[in-house]
Image (cartoon, rainbow, N blue to C red; front, side, top):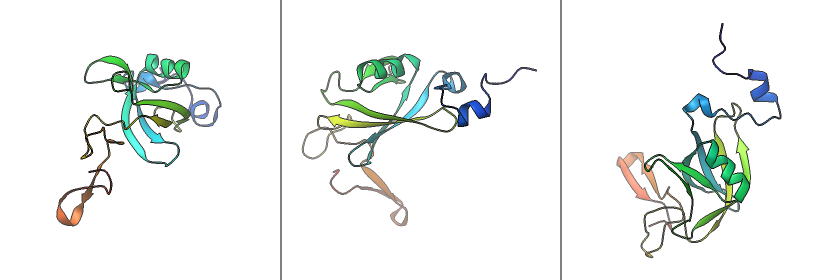
Length: 140
């Protein structure tokens, strides 16, 4: 009988070896990008093995662009790079949190009312009672 994955639950959940499960999710792992200083979630992205390895090597957050099918280091064109401070690995080793320091204005491709990139992609919140969205304070 074939095991669906090559590592045991014990190895993944309790072990200290890095056994990222890229194959489990079709070659990509989800990454929540969090600002170290504030705890604010800046963006969600994906990494493949190459992007993860480049992140480790350069110390700058690198991702796999699912829309362009290419590797990209955040800030290559905008100058708004993300310096890696820490990487958290979840219990199943199939999701990550990049804790970063923002070196620039923001991570979002949209612009705020100040005509600069928004700091975070999460700039609106759901107001259930109004059945709609509202800008997060300071993120207009």
